[in-house]
Image 1 (cartoon, rainbow, N blue to C red):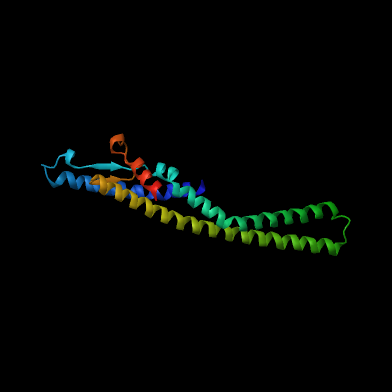
Image 2 (cartoon, rainbow, N blue to C red):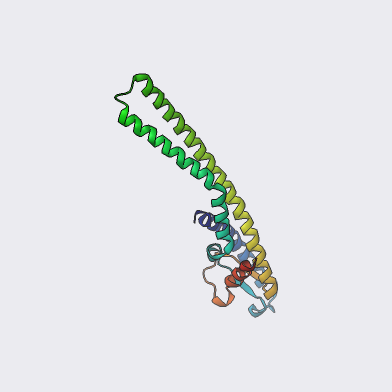
Length: 183
């Protein structure tokens, strides 16, 4: 789910750029010729949010990342349990321990906490890097699918978003999803 949200945010940035490009293209096409009618210009619209939510590649990416990082996540879970056990032992037996033993256990717990935090930070960074790689790959696939559908169906212009209203008849999202499902 986090991967999907990140993908949506990244596509929203692209949507803003597409909106600007769309406005420029629209101004250009209306200014080109008075003989060019709206019926001659075939425009399509793609719902990026829906594609990111429904594309089979999104689920595949999530599962792939989960398989890749689950061993490290399990290691962190074990480490957290060890820290909790040491802390519980200190709380329970700390008063009856010798000063030296108590200090040693506190130092061990402190060192383990620092190591845990370091490993946790590294894992988050690695996950974010891989998510960005997967997102980039998915964006390329989506763009190629949009281009394929656009060329096959003869669209002159396809926009990703930033549109106040788009009729169902110009929405090619389902066609793009169908093509992505075949890959």
